Image 1 (tube, chains in turn yellow, orange, cyan, brown):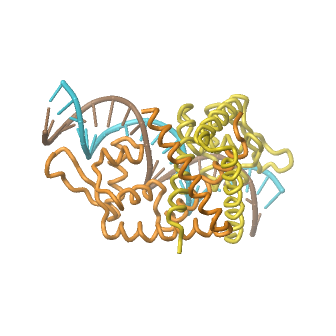
Image 2 (cartoon, protein in one colour):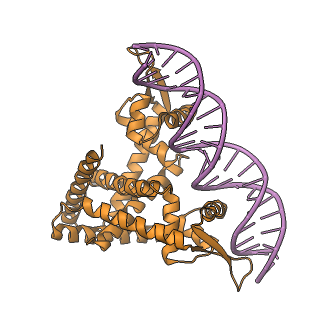
Image 3 (spheres, rainbow over the protein chains, first blue to last red):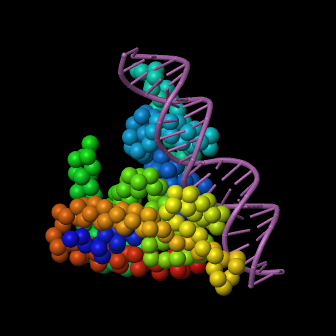
Length: 144
Length: 144
DNA sequence: TATTGTTATACTCTATAACTATA
DNA sequence: TATAGTTATAGAGTATAACAATA
């Protein structure tokens, strides 16, 4: 027996959040995947391969993705000093500014969505969301 | 002051749910937008224009989307009897079966994600998610 | 004239397969 | 031989602009 109401609510909620992310990106001509790319690069300087794992994309897709972002001055490629096959990707000043600004707008947008909830309800929602997320990590590890 | 922890949790949760949807679709060679298309058509027989509003896409994008789904035997076009400019889109038997089966798999997947929560916590999460969603509807109406 | 839908075009995004350079 | 990344190719998905048919 599945909880139809909860399943539907989580599906709708996920679309609400993803649409917000997509719209904020679109205001700067960024697709959702470019938003995710900048999001990853805010805190990491991964290799092309690591980037592919993070985003769940083939290495050839990453090549094109980074090409287009680089063409717009958002990221740069740097050669690894230890293994000359390896390329690291980093975010530029411009990309960083865009990512930081977008993250702030996103945070405000989501905050406005939960503004009607009491402080206690917001804490509860945070706790329950984390529980579902950690459950999700466990599930995806099982399928490795 | 924005609630960083809640914002992050909702973002992560949205990716968890959307990835599940995308993976289930991919098992039948359906993209996320094709999944959404079939989802809408399960309960409606909209015109091309209405479909565009539902999915937030331009009418030209809908033409291509429906073309590809029709080529695969998932949907059909029917002429409106009252206005000869208008085309209605309906789901086929094959599409219906696919959509119903996918919805069941999705429901099971999400249910397994929340299986660790108590019944009370699941009820609370349902309530809070609905509150955020209705807040989101209100917000998007304001921007009309 | 206004509206519905299609078509032409251009670009992003994605995977597969073949390739190059390095290990 | 194996691995990291690129390139060639093909297809889905998207929007803009121009178009045809109908209202």
